[in-house]
Image (cartoon, rainbow, N blue to C red):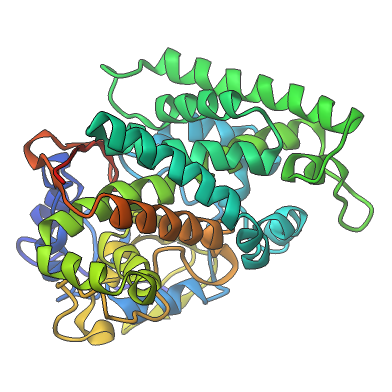
Length: 409
């Protein structure tokens, strides 16, 4: 099958460039609305941009669409440390695998990321969240990213992996270096050194867990087998790196962006405060929909298929905009561009769908609910200095690097 030579409509080239432009990272949503007028758009480089909810869902459940050979998302950290991970093969390339190989690796760790496991961690997450909020109240101000949103996931990943909390905080610092695309923050050599340090640490953890296993994910990894085959030492190291990198990303970005959202929408914040226990679960889901921390991802057509009305040929590349699909009026109503803490959004795209649904979704939701409960209950009055917010470069993840926060009462 030959894909028809569809050329971008006038303005579409500039539109896509604007969406990928760092200057529009804070508010790409009006651009997404324009993009959705063409659900499957042929990009200048010949790939396809998919921006509407139903087309994205169909794509993610289509067995003819895979991730193998998808390439690094433009402007993402996958061009640096992530590319090295993929080159490492095995578990390092887990997010770049298709079934059945992907299923084998997912089965090895899935037991550690179930909703039941997340529920068992609730009390420990609450302890960590209270400690963090205690510090915020004592200081009266903080950076939401560094002091709240990043601190909690680093503590939880330490719990999950069965490593010292100080080590979890160091791993968080390493992930920040690995994720940056700004050479002024970290040079390529520094990003590479961060990757090597984490891999070396993972090897040490694996050795310790083999000698003294515990009830944690790291111990489970060194002992796990599928059809009598476990992970090699190299696969263990790369899988550890992947879990640490991915384990806190969505939580960190959601909390920092979500608290800013509540400041920007005082009426919605008041509604939430009036029924914190009742509305918190729907509020977190609405924030996940509204902010969509993972902006875009890549896929490759492994066989000829059709998305919407557009024929797609084997080998064609696709770029999926989760943030656009999550605001699609056809799925979430005419007010999809508005924040509504009473909305009950179903089947959001934030954690993907199908075989590549995020393993850490339950843990991310739990961390966000518990932390927001603590903050809203104990710091109901606060301000966010929006002029001081700094956004990371790259198109792959919409993530703030700094969000100044002040307790006002």
